[in-house]
Structures are given as C-alpha cells and as structure tokens.
Length: 331
Ligand SMILES: NC(=O)c1ccc[n+]([C@@H]2O[C@H](COP(=O)([O-])OP(=O)(O)OC[C@H]3O[C@@H](n4cnc5c(N)ncnc54)[C@H](O)[C@@H]3O)[C@@H](O)[C@H]2O)c1
Image 1: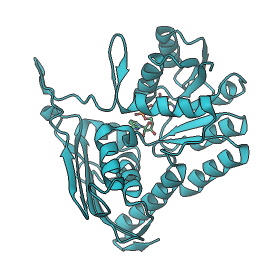
Image 2: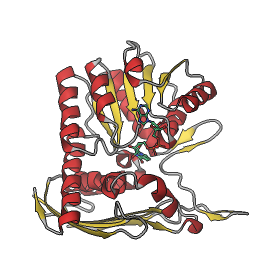
Image 3: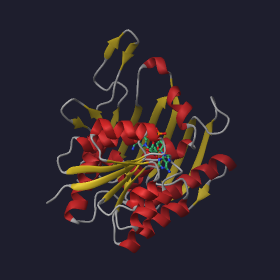
C-alpha cells in the first residue's frame, strides 16, 4: 500500500501540531501546506520538507495528488474548503467544531455522501486512552448503561484572549458534547444552559449546561476559561460517569509530571500531543493513524461519527439559544 498523500489547510497552533504528528508517521506523505499567512506556511514547509506551499486553499485543492485534506482553519472557516475538497474527490478531516452553523455541518455531510468520500470530525478525545477506556467500560457492562454524566473542561485565562473569538460552546463544550453523545448512544432532547461573562462582554467564560437524552441519560457539562496562568496547568478537566454497574472518573490537572523552572511550576499534558526528537505521541497521532488507515484501505470509519458531530452542533446551537434566552430548549 502506498503512502497516504495529505494536504493541510490552516497551520496555526493546532494545524502545526497535525503537521508535527504526520511528519513522524511512515505511512503518510504531506505533499502540500496552505495558510493565508504566507510567511508562516513557508517557514513550516521549509522546516518539515514539504514541497508545495499555498496561501489560497482553492489553488491547493486543484491538485490531483492529494487524498486527504486536513482542515484546521479558524472555527467559522471550515465549510468552504471542506466542501470544495470533497467535490474535488478528496477525503476530509475537519477540526472541531466541524462548523459553527448547523446548516453548514449538514452541508458537509451531504457533500461527503454525494461524492462517496469520507469526512472525519476532529473529535480526538475518542482516541485519548482514558475517554476511550470509559467508552469500552460502558459497552462491556463493567460500568454498563450510563445514567448520569458530568464533564468539566477548564482552560487558562491567557487562552481565552485568543479563543473568545468564538462562543465557548464551540471551542470547549463541543468536545464534551461529542463524548456525551457517544457514551449515551442516544440523541439530546432537552437543553438548559446558563453562565457568566467575567472577563469579556461578548462570550461567557463560564458555561454550564444540562442535557437530557431520548434514552433517559442526564448530563451536566461545565466549561470555563478561568484557570490562572500562574497555576501552570494546561488542562483542568474532569469526568464522572455513573452507570448501572459502576462508576468511572478521572481529573487531569496534575498530569503526573511537574517541571519546575525559573518561571514556576508547569504540569504539561502528554495525552493529546507531544513531539519528541524521534517521534510523536498522543491522541492526535492515534486519531490521524486511524484516519489514514481508513483512507488507505477504503474502509469507511466506524469509530468516528460525522453524524454525531452534526448532532453536537445542533445541540450547541440550542445551548447558545438557551444561554441567551434563559429558556429550556426542546430538540
Ligand atoms: N481537537 C483539539 O483538541 C483542538 C485543539 C486546538 C484547536 N482546535 C481547532 O483547530 C482549529 C484551528 O485552531 P488553532 O488553535 O490552530 O487556531 P489558530 O488561530 O492558531 O490557527 C488558524 C490558522 O488558520 C489559518 N486560516 C484561517 N482561515 C484560513 C483560510 N480560509 N485559508 C487558509 N488559512 C486559513 C490562519 O492564518 C491561522 O494560521 C479550530 O477549529 C480549533 O477549534 C482543535
């Protein structure tokens, strides 16, 4: 089997992690990079030895030697390149949130079906070992049917200065919406959300949501951007799933490694993505490997679900509506 030929659109902080991970995967060849920031994309292409560079994604997508297009542009900038890539016969990985509009998310799914191509949502927590093990424990009856689910996702105040560019539900909560939908194995029917705008007036930096699913599962999701930068904690997340036969829980603020240096104490995360001199590790690399195996083999993905991602955006829209109106929203 030949190498999977990949083109990446969007090489900001997360797209460049994708490039770092692909660069250590022997089954992959990154043939082209595109970012509207020409200086940035040229310097990354030089560093990673990628032969073709673009600042206009339409030009990159006119190439006929790319099998998989990896989209990591701004959150509200995914639709146009995704549909263009699918219409030009390429498979697509689109970062979370797959879109910030339900109509666009549905449009991407239709474009994939129309062209007989795969579209993968960038919900990489399905590949993070702790979340994946909880899913298996639900499926294998060790925890059994879930009844109550709690998810917390906390990030630093410094990150909020960048990511307040979009509503918190699309940046943070959308991860937990995918997990909740996956674990519940059902669709959300009822949404109530509330929160606070502490450090900004446009989007909440504290957001709480209650969900009810068609099969009776209840869930609470809490996202915030309130971790003080000085704490040195990249991720402050927690999970508790209560099922018929057992309970699963973890929290990750400690991360098991502490680095003390002149700037203070840091607890870096190694579960998501870490590049070393000789390799890379983490959920991102495992997700990309799974996707490239699907592309190389022609086997449709069964572990990722774009339909779940579309439902996640439907619920996200209801969360915004509930947050703004103070009303419970029925789906
Ligand atoms: N799965 C995860 O855990 C995870 C983590 C971080 C970010 N993300 C997602 O990845 C995406 C990118 O986030 P980021 O943090 O890298 O943002 P970023 O602002 O650092 O980078 C975005 C890049 O996209 C480029 N860009 C935007 N629109 C473009 C276009 N139309 N054509 C070409 N280039 C374009 C920008 O120039 C920029 O370099 C977002 O959707 C974000 O939510 C996912």
